[in-house]
Length: 159
Image 1 (cartoon, rainbow, N blue to C red):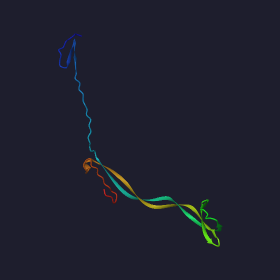
Image 2: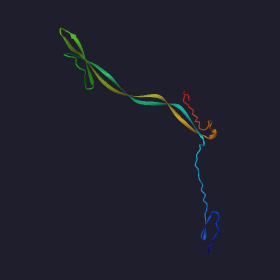
Image 3: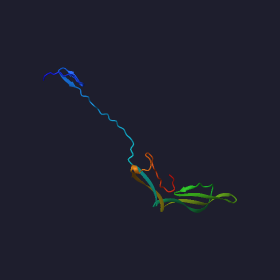
Image 4: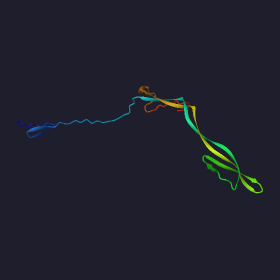
């Protein structure tokens, strides 16, 4: 290959015996941005209805059975209330004046708690709300962008 010397041109550098070309590089710079764009709206409506249901529950109760048992024996002091199994015994004493005062156990009141269960059913009404969501196109929307429209369908309530 013959050595040829070329005159330098803009963008080239002379090197002995040959020319080196410099190619300018271009680079794109991207800028990322975001903006709010309305693509549509949503309308949510609530409706309340009353449904009939039957409620079931077991009710528990206690009642007291009272039985008076005459005893009629003399005691030296007032007996204490005592427990005999599931029966509570409450002594009732009476002072009887004779020539000498004596305590006579007149009777005992025996109390027993009796448990019972009754199943009951009663009709009841409860309110149920349902939400309806409807997508609206931007041209159908009646309120300006950024404004939320809310309607309350419940009876007797004020929005």
